[in-house]
Length: 100
Image (tube, rainbow, N blue to C red; front, side, top):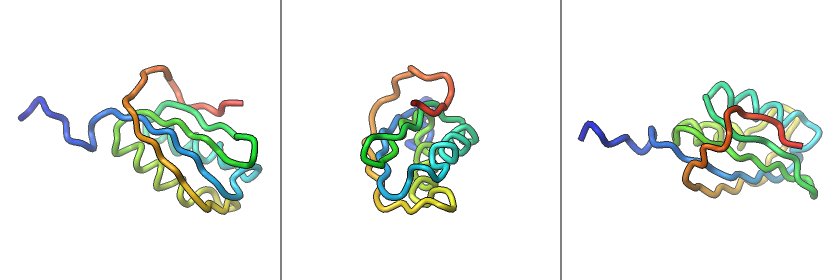
């Protein structure tokens, strides 16, 4: 049907926890730049214990592309694990930012 969006086009959100050497290596800046280029909204935030939390919202294919980037990270990062929890979009964000 014309009214049905493909799975890749549907709006989704994901909460992503990234473990490894991901703080102090421009990981959040890397995330923000890539997320904005993909047209996503949400945030990247350092967590106690050295993880980075990312909440990304937008087209499911774009969120998945960001997740692919997060598995690699910026040059100085050493990503060891990426955990993803998909959910329905919230519409709470108008941009992608660094959350402090």
